[in-house]
Image (cartoon, rainbow, N blue to C red; front, side):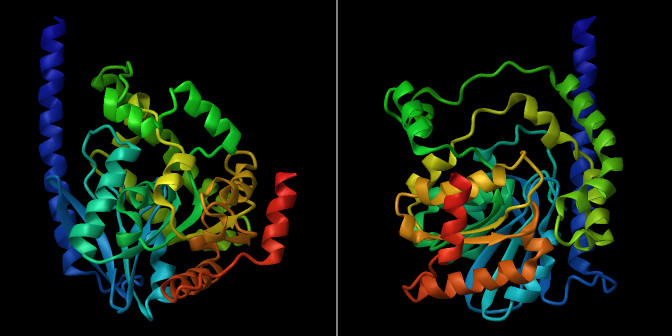
Amino acid sequence: DGGFLERRSSEGQAREAVEAREWHRVLGEVDLQGNPLRDDSRHLTFRYWRWRGHLLRYAEGDGAGQAVTLIHGFGASSHQWDRAFELLNDGHKVFALDLLGFGHSEKPQLTYTQYLWEDMVEDFILEVVGEPSFLAGNSIGGFTALSAAANLGNVFCPGLILCNSAGRMVPMDVYEQEMLERGGVTLKQKMLTTGLPQKASPSEALLTLFGKGVIKLLQPQVPKVLPWLYVQKPENADQKLEDNILRDSNDPGGFSVIASGAKLPPPRTKNELLADYVGPLLVTQGLNDPLGGGISKTRFYLYPEVHPNPEQVTLIPLQSGHCPHHETPEEVCAAIRDFVAGVNAGSQPKSTPEALALALSLKQ
């Protein structure tokens, strides 16, 4: 009967959860022992941190100076920041984190949301980094970095770097109208009063089946999709990146992030988050990003309009695609170095007249 099937499903999920935890424990031991054949470990050491009972991997550079914490995008991991470690290590203490559900971190069957990951990054800064840190993120990692920065404020996050960040951002008149429709409160204020909105979703068994099916469909596409995302330098979407993404997706629970997409609560807009953060912002934007049908260009010109203080926004237009930190790391890291030094010296680099003119032309 239905009760019997549900009980068997629960028993199977419990067994899988135990096996997955053991898998990641062994994986962590291998990481901590080090692999002399790995060519991305010259300036970094992989470490582990237990957060809310889950093992999370992070990379720590061997440099010293201002802390900079790097957050990867969907499907990627701290490995995708390997070139940034090479370029930022001198004069900075660099960290990169594998978000829960990605990389070598555990992949429990949870509901993965903006709110889960922002709590994780916030706690990482406070508990592991232990000092103020600039936050940089790509894609969903950019949105997560912004969300965490909004909670941390300028004291613990003196500057924010977004590389083709995900997240909804709208013209201010649209945002203000949405605020009016909510009674003049932000989405955060509303959720603090009413809680996260309930969303009907399929059973866990169906979600698991769906997640595993999508993973199997996506894996053969990885070798084709990566060069497509790296518009200017497709050769930088190398075999190592492909191998890491495919390896990570095969971990026990690797389907969980995709499966949870059917029950996600609404995220806060970047308009709301930037209003909460109100700090120095560097935008290194690959304008030829093929994702979203040109939305990368729209977001580029919106940042100075949405940020409460446009003078604190530094725009760096790039001809790269969705992952400029890995496709054109020299340009991105040079901008990060200048930004960090300028903010710490009280003289944030300004957008060039050419960058501002380009933003204006995109708006028109």
